[in-house]
Image (cartoon, rainbow, N blue to C red; front, side):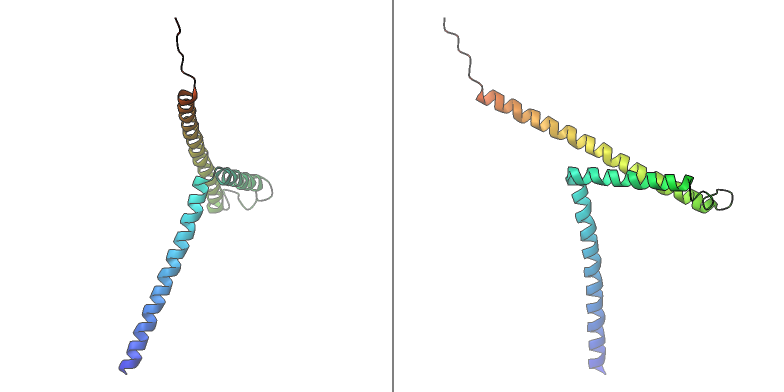
Length: 130
């Protein structure tokens, strides 16, 4: 009996450990993806493009062939849900664009500082011969 209880405890603890490890792994992957989007300029710009493309596709489809399904009088929940998703995608792309603008500005300032330092140290010193 005691050995059965002990093995049941061990198996439940190992299951908990596996579930926690899987959860941490999934969180680690999402953090890895977020860091990649934030750090890499091309990835960030591709993400902005995809977000806006999806938002425009939803907007176009909502005003054309999904118009009967998204009638606000017949299906108000679908109508509101579409506009919430479109707004969320657009705001996300806008925030990424603002972040990209700030990062480009910061990198430009850093490059100017490096250039000034290089010009000061590498420029020939003026001497006045009288």
